[in-house]
Length: 149
Image (cartoon, rainbow, N blue to C red; front, side, top):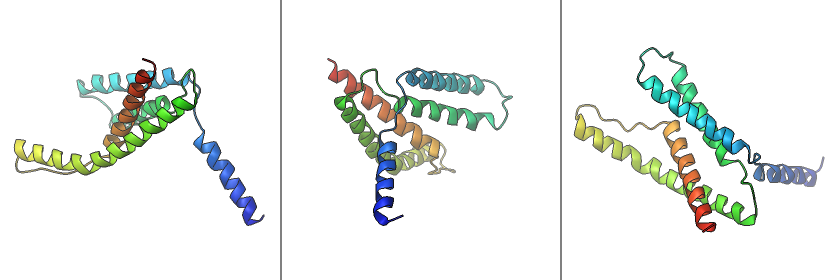
C-alpha cells in the first residue's frame, strides 16, 4: 500500500463522514426521544425514589435525541439547506466556546451573591453539549424559516 493509496482512502472516508446524515423521518424520532427524556426528567424531579443511574441515562438520551434531530435531513435537502446547516453549526460552535468561557463566572457570581460561603465554577459536559445542540437547532430553524418567507 503506497502513501497515495492511504491518502485516497482517508479522503474517501472523510467525505463519507462529512456527508453523513440520517433520513428525514428520524427527525420525528429524535424529537420524540428528547420530549420523552425531558418529561421523564421533570416527573422524576417531583419523586424521591429514582435509581441513581436513571438521571444520567435520561440526560444522555436527551442528548442523543437532540443529535438525531440535528443530523437528520430536511424533506428537501438542497445546497442552500446544507449552507444553512453549516452556518448553524458554526454559530453553535462559536457561541459554545463563549458559553464555556463566560458561564462559570456568571454561575460563580450568582452563587456568591445567594450563598456567599460556597461558590463554585463547575461546568459539566451535559451543559455544554445541550447548549450547543440547542443553539444549532434554534439557529437552523430560524434560518430555515427566514429562507421560506
